Amino acid sequence: MAGGKIPGASLFAKDRSVALSDLARVTFLDTSRETLQGQCILLATRDQLPSALALLELDGHARRIVVCPGDLPLQYLPEIVATAQVDAIAIDSGASVGPDTVSGVRTITVHEQPRALAQPGAEGARAIGAIETEWVLLTSGTTGAPKLVLHTLASLAGHIPAPAVASTPGDAPRTWSTFYDIRRYGGLQIFLRAVLGDSSLVLSDAHESTPDFLARAGQRGVTHISGTPSHWRKALMSGATGRISPVYVRLSGEIADQPVLDGLRSAFAQARIAHAFASTEAGVAFDIDDGRAGFPAGLLDQSPGGAQLKVEDGTLRIRGARNASRYLGAQSAALLSPDGYVDTGDMVELREGRYHFVGRKGGVINVGGLKVFPEEVEAVINAHPGVRMSLVKARKNPITGAVVVADVVLAGDGDSPAPDVMTRSIVESCRNVLAPHKVPAMIRYVASLEVSASGKLVRPGA
Image 1 (tube, rainbow, N blue to C red):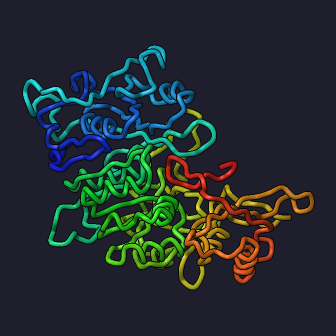
Image 2 (cartoon, helix red, strand yellow; image 1 turned 60 degrees about the horizontal axis):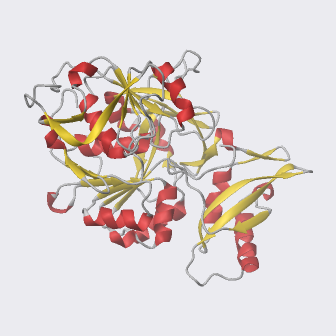
Image 3 (cartoon, helix red, strand yellow; image 1 turned 135 degrees about the vertical axis):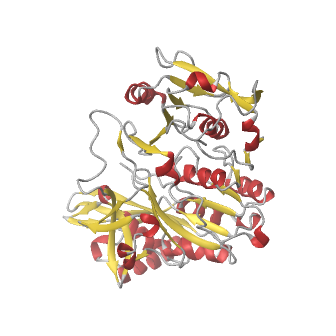
């Protein structure tokens, strides 16, 4: 990276690996890095490893890098290219983007086999004072064109590689892994933690089952691993968590409710279990490792990691050096409020000195004029010993406009009671802690729930 040393660790993909120290002597690009100086490059590779290599090579040389996840619908590409003022698109051998995808924009290739530099360490040298490259990330919304969020390496890396996690036994090298795609904010954080901390990183694969991924991570000796709560619920359901022996387990991207935290504590008794709050726009605000859902109210006065927190109109607001600077695009809304805070849109509720996340501001179900946050109901359902995960949504009703219904995945231990008995038990649990309008009117049992490419439950209308 610009101004820094070349990392000495490795990136491990499903079928191959690259020692990052090789980047001092080789290039994986089919053109000289010098020819890309000051240009805007959009990464549109199929696989994560070529994007990772391109990021390492281009930072400090490109004016701007647009990081596109592998599942980006091609229909949005021309608009992104125009908004970001893209000069070239970087692809790999399996990319669905070709030379004629966007008129007037050339493509460059990130090859699987490196090309030796004529003067190792000279071409594209990462010298202090190189360009401060802008990194553009895409939001992970499921409808409409994604927003383009402008960061720098400084805002993305923040206090990395400050010692935010416990050391591995005997100071053995750390090996990170993540269920995330590194081209999304959550995965990019882990990529940066690994390479800036001189650690190896085991990349996930979109076509790999959870048990196979965990087996591969275990074979590589993964010590630190992250994912969304949905990722971790799937891992717990798979019965394959015993294939890894991490010292640090991290959750982010969704509400970490008490059942998933308890499940991970049971699966990884010797690991530090931490849940972090972060978003593409706000950056990483804090992580909590006390084993409890939510976060202490005292954090609002502590500025964890340099981030200032406040709650206004029920939503968490964040201000700090890890905030993105703005959205790209002339018609884009302002990202920061006049006082410099990002409104995360995440609703919180204070209970006995601790703030609990209850849902997204835009995800409310209206039941006869009364508000219901799906995530609040899911937390109660998930706490039932017979339930592994759930998805709460609205169903139209001629009287109240909508009622609450739930899709439920059972724990699958083979001893579940009959469906009608289980339904009565779940509904009774809900009635014990929720207002009547929040109690599900219907429960449907399903084998699985859809999880998006960003690792989050797919919610209707989200």
